[in-house]
Amino acid sequence: MRPILSLILILPILAFYSCNKIESGHGRASFYLTDGPLESNNVSGVVICITRVEAFGPDGWKVIKEYEKPEAVDLFSLQGGETLFLEEKELVSGKYDQIKLGLVVSQTSDGGNLPAHYIKFNDGTVSEISVPIGDQAGYTIIGDFTIPDGGITSIIMDFDLRKSVLKMQNSEQIILKPTVRLLEEAKVGSVQGVISGISGTRVAYAYKGGNFNDNESTPNADGVRFNNAESSSNVDENGNYYISYLPSDEYDIVVASFDGEGNFIEVKTIEEGVVINDGELKTLNITI
Image (cartoon, rainbow, N blue to C red):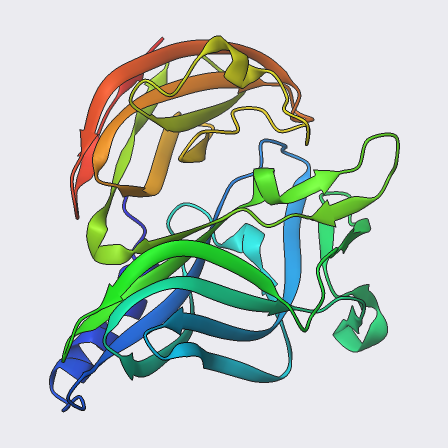
């Protein structure tokens, strides 16, 4: 069940650069985007427009990629461990702790027919997503990663759509409030399996051990439930789930049910003490 696309994209890049000399005091990093799911079944796309990517490290801010024109990215297509390659860059080796994404503030895409950022529903309708941060400042992602001297690494920027796309209270306005994890691919694992004994819309959440409590199913100030989950996965019609890019740790897997509009019903079960190691794809089948 491990998605093959991300491996196909990443492995050839690693193999190619292993045969090429890297300047002393430098290393190479490849940058990718991925995404976590929404709980609603009535969404078919979530598009944002990126203008540039920067990273902050030993030499300050460095541009990873500057787009000639805004790049439209459908985050909704990057679920289940799928990734989108952004750029590869040789950089000064050492510790990095921020990545900045330049986002279009107010612009149409698709020749002016669509907003720059939008959510598309199954019935074909589109709603604009407003970006409250400026293109000059961009959105800063906080998280540590290291570029080894003479080595290579892959960096994953993991959007969490259910926390990032928010509907304003008492308004129809939808805003982008990015929640993004910054991860080194070599330091994460995944868990997959089949959840049986329950039908309908189900979501599996991964919580670091002991971090889940009954209050998690209550919406926070932004209207987000299960806000402290590390990551999550929608469960398909056959009961399959796949939670990717989990830093090595012990997790509790929480299974919850929703209606077709994404409205929470109840927590069905909690599987505690699930240990995930670097590079591991753990299989955990759950019967409710």
